[in-house]
Image 1 (cartoon, rainbow, N blue to C red):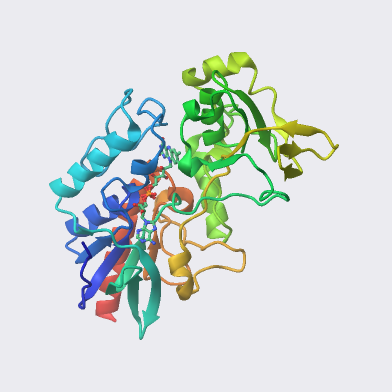
Image 2: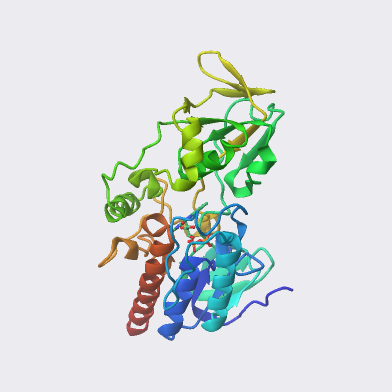
Length: 360
Ligand SMILES: Cc1cc2nc3c(=O)[nH]c(=O)nc-3n(C[C@H](O)[C@H](O)[C@H](O)COP(=O)(O)OP(=O)(O)OC[C@H]3O[C@@H](n4cnc5c(N)ncnc54)[C@H](O)[C@@H]3O)c2cc1C
């Protein structure tokens, strides 16, 4: 069923109904700010509903509470079901004005008012927007020569089919982040698996606190650079789930990045060829912000610069280029706890902006 557009000028439109969008909507509602939430998914659950089936609540690193609602705890239950149900209940309990499926195609400035246009043909007008679109819909695969000639399978984290799919195959996992570590943990006991990364992975040596790491990401974003993930700063850690894989030595047999793909495998710079049946690109995601391009928010450094938050680095949400645009779940707030805090900060920034506008 299509979603009708609203012709009135709303005080705010939230784009995205994941952790960050729901937190924003909760706080907007609490402040009495008229808004809608537009979400591309047909069902509640943000990106969590699309996580692979073998990711259990015991595997996730910890999901933060939503305002006034305690997050489900660790269990063997599937994260893609548990969190989706939790978000669904939350939207209903707080009567949040989520419209779906609405896939925002672009946000434009029309005589000082923000026009939000969807792929489905809907249009909304707003004085402010809170962008909460996460990264899941923008997977990143680096390009290597011969990628198209490779006759085996290529997968990205976004579509990981589970370890059983690879049983009996020779797989190379590419990427030095948390997802790669988790995939190796699942694959090593059932497949012949190799690990390649561009740079040596940074293991968590206990050197940085989470807060310090978030502050470092915030510094990048304040300078207009594209955000880096918090784990790129804190480092990686093995969990009990990865113990069986660790004993196979998979984490010690890491290879540098191959130079090219060929029909039946990959070739390294020294000419060595490695036959593989499948490449699993655990190469991460980029912020899903293409729809904001018409607003010209990007700095020359390639990121969207955010003003420093008043009290908390995760309260850094307002774009330097346009105070009407708040970014939540972006840069220092790209985690469930960050999205939650940023939602509150964004709602307050919207209130302040509307107040300033009215008094002006
Ligand atoms: C595999 C994986 C595991 C993770 N595990 C953890 C963890 O354990 N703990 C933790 O804190 N963080 C974790 N993270 C990071 C965390 O998931 C995210 O930072 C957080 O959940 C993102 O919430 P969000 O609201 O910003 O975005 P999302 O949950 O991605 O929600 C964004 C929503 O916006 C919608 N959307 C996107 N584009 C548009 C558009 N153009 N128009 C309309 N709607 C749009 C999407 O469909 C989606 O519903 C993990 C990330 C990954 C990839």
